[in-house]
Image (cartoon, rainbow, N blue to C red; front, side, top):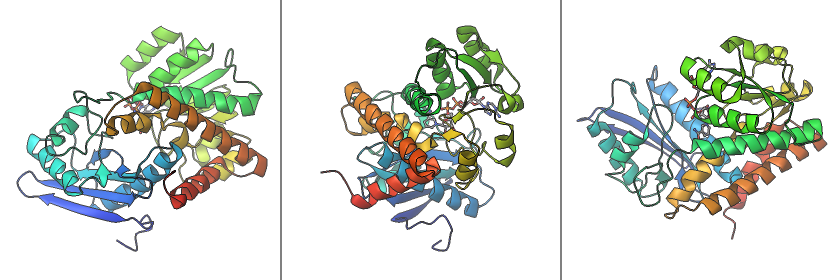
Length: 348
Ligand code: NAD
């Protein structure tokens, strides 16, 4: 464990097993320096426990950086449950998971991530108060993706100011990969701002819906990288910026909500050398965790969310400006600022 290359000085890594429900879960708390850790739970059928451990460590460190950049009073943590989210779910499993979360006495707050929906978290919440992303509690924040998408749209404008000299997207062409929750709402904002859209998805219903609402041109999933566009907005998968796709992209900006867009952090340097401005994913997509943090605070307030989103956009602007003025990859600048914020501790 301590030799794992993703260990990165985690404060705590907690393993849980429940014989009755078959729960096998890991909760990783990377840092509580800025407050109780917060991050979603992922349910995935990992090939082995090494893969499970590496995933949770990488994700919880990512949440430390994301939460620090979003200026919310939370450190980074994440949970993974080993299993098939289509066949292995049960009430007993999520109750056992809720007890696992509760045993950390508030050092970790959970919410939804890949493979986990609100119904699962509602069950866990019967065993712990440290669960958010609910639909029924007093402070329930509901679906975070509209706030994530608003941040992505505003982040695209931040990039446009630096890449094109104006945040006016009228007449600009944006290639949108994935028009699910985040990508769909982002596409609607872009269309309203007058952008021409080229969209792709593997879900034909989602595609048809957004095409009907925006008049977007539809291309096959693999063709999105070759689109004649000004901006590429990834809102589906991770690791889509790699040696192969970078050669094909004709855009000046990459800005979208998907997590872990760069295949490895060093890819940021190649993106920079290609003359493309990249909005670091965990900065531009922080709107969702801001929405969840509002719920954790106990009284959901939309003005608080909006004010935090304004601050996040200022932070994104600072990252982009510092990167451009020092010829440094934007993701390196973001990592450095995140680490400095964590080291400095909570704002007083
Ligand atoms: P979603 O499942 O609603 O949407 C993802 C879409 O991508 C789906 O429509 C899916 O069909 C499509 N897709 C899958 N494979 C594809 C492919 N090969 N080519 C094109 N499209 C493909 O998920 P979401 O909540 O919109 O999240 C999208 C991304 O944003 C994920 O990486 C997620 O981790 C990240 N993110 C989401 C939020 C949020 O608030 N939901 C917050 C931060 C980050």
